[in-house]
Length: 258
View 1 (cartoon, helix red, strand yellow):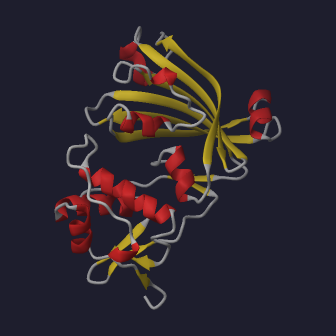
View 2 (cartoon, one colour):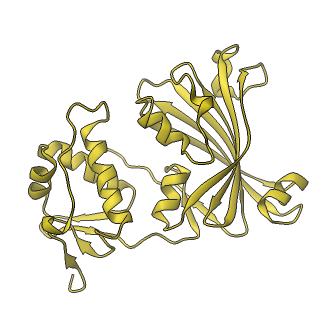
View 3 (tube, helix red, strand yellow):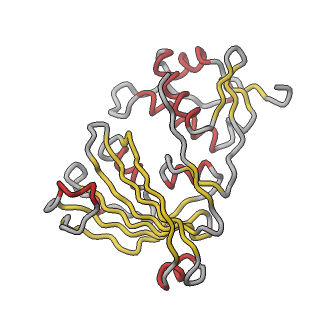
């Protein structure tokens, strides 16, 4: 603990949460603490202010604050030590992806700037050849979104997403070269994704994938199929992603209740 630096509230520009916002209070706190880490105001190996001080600064109770800190701990951004305080962890290995995060959040945590190049964006209708998770959604309108994803200047993966638009009308009008899909679902439509399921397999790059990702045809790819569910249990999005396997490894974590 000798190399841990204590951070005081006076060093942080914390504002009380908005109780009238549809965004949950713990989520507002979580996002603000992530911002402070991203901006370097809560740097790695720093000791953040005590829980009670944070409660007063954000204007919330201890239960809400603990929920926000628990989410940060689950993402390995902080370590909570009983009787010793909460420490900001060093940034994770830049070559590792954690599948329980959105791509934009993950790139930010890795210290990289995420951006997208939209290759296809249009409204379609769920058809009989749809993924299994959409079998009971045939005939519903969806957004098909194909993007080349970058971390800094490096192409990271190709993602083909299908999003049900019943609960998010007008989603097709947003510029996904600039916006994160999950962030829009949360901020614009107040849809909270609470469960993400992944299926991982391997493949080799075809000509199109190789040209997009800057690799050779036949090079190995990691294939990740992702289904995202709302707190109601309803599926909202399915994505088929192809990532370079020569530069990145993947990990997933699960947090179980006590």
